[in-house]
Image 1: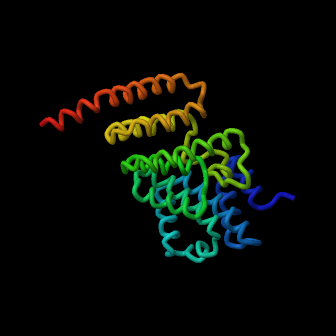
Image 2: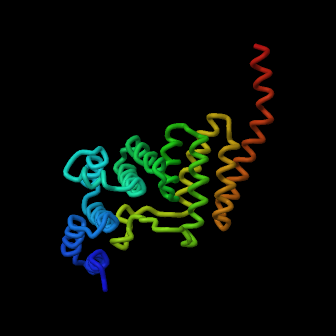
Length: 245
């Protein structure tokens, strides 16, 4: 027998969005258990994000702060459930250009145990904007590790990725080499300024392992390694010049 959430999912994907959200709201307000209430809430969030992500962001920000009409629901959520909501909120904040708030939300999600490729990628992107090179490399390496599991669809348990209800990610995140390449270029710029291009090379090697067929990466590797060699050759001369001044 089909359950309420599955019925709502079918209706939504066949264009009966109002009927679907009505079922979800009724299920959320009259659940059989907390798990069902949470799944219904996520379905509602997806529908609301697709319609108006800015308003949904404000709604979630109020809720996770412990205020508003849904504070009681928030307090009943497990830490794992709260981590999912924090990640979703962080994703919205990235797209509405509230990057500091996004960093805080995504960090809260991670501290509560959320562990997804997109979470660590977005956190890495936030960290490189803050010039935090070591954290960026650590987070992106974790993202790439989880990306492989995502690619093979072998993640254990329920991931609750956005789009599982509507059938399409309402924030339209892409997942591929271009997304990591965009951050790699920022990493390389920061690493060059910090005279630590080896950090950029470390990230690039992880990307080569994940995307072996991307012909741009070997070219970037040659460029970075050439820069490392040139820097190592000229650095002693620069230091000697400073000493003789």
